[in-house]
Length: 261
Image (spheres, rainbow, N blue to C red):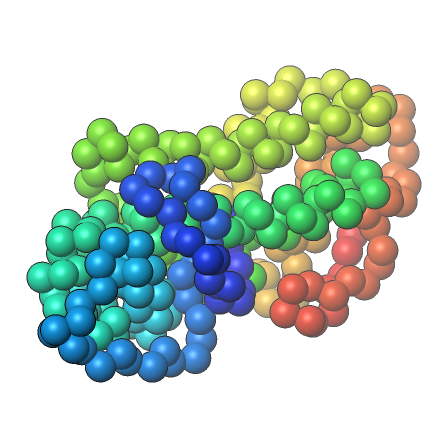
């Protein structure tokens, strides 16, 4: 469940219902408080304007209170809208969280794709994939949103949205490995099985980071995961060598230096 430390850059247009609509950030969370919009009952927003205002407000509330404590009335107050107006557009809290999550993941995928287009090799793309997938810190808002939403019961439409979001990351990893195999950079692994193992490992590491397991206080989960994946993808008879993505110390997205394997 990929994550991000920084909050979203709000797109010009928010996604409509569903997972494939548009671009957004994933945590839904910016660290600074968002100013409340005074409610003018004579000028309640409608359509896209209302959805955009509600989404911005939801992200601000999630950042401050988390998803468990999120109330539709909090969003309404932040957005300067009535609770009934929020309910009209999103129906219920579960629906809102699904849309925030979909908006979030679309933004993350866009930023990942931009970075991947600048990568010099499949090895560098694999590095980026791991970096974008793992939580950036304990309490990462995006991952917290993922776990909250996944823990809820969903109807068929909700399950379809979540399935598409999860499958989207599998497909991105498979594309990286497939490219690496075609170029002779990676071993000819069984792609579906490798993807299952890789995503299961990354999910387990993510839970460790979110929980604050002490073993990751002095070791980089990113470096650990990348090393494990590269060992499995190494060509037969290939010794340990510097991949194009190996650059010793590297600045992560928060600006801190991080050791690579």
